[in-house]
Length: 110
Image (cartoon, rainbow, N blue to C red; front, side, top):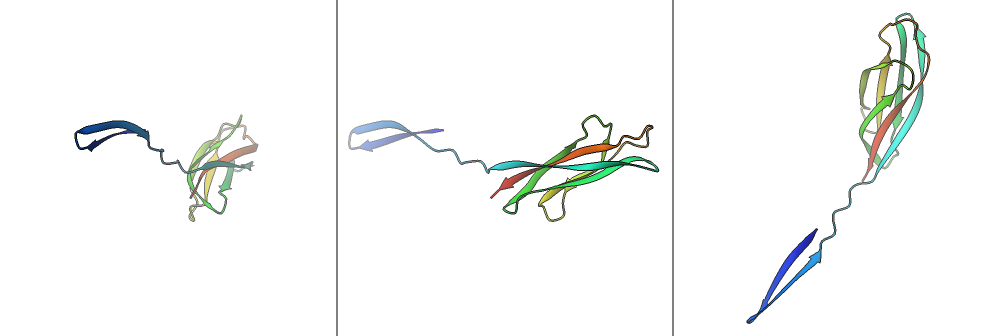
């Protein structure tokens, strides 16, 4: 961003520009954590939490089920604001998929 400056000295006007440094955006980091997807009496299910580093706070998150056909039953920040938790299931379809899924937390540093 540039600002235009006009300085008037008596009958002389000076015109110039100078750069204004943009405010730096807070640094972010994506943290991921794999978790198990198990078969149960009502289908496949799993829950996982990705935790942010101590000097950061979570600003978003989600999950990737890879080849497993899962949907999120819950996807939300942890109560302390330092991580992201997901709870997934397949809705009771057959055959029940088992394997791993990955939860992601988007962490922002102060």
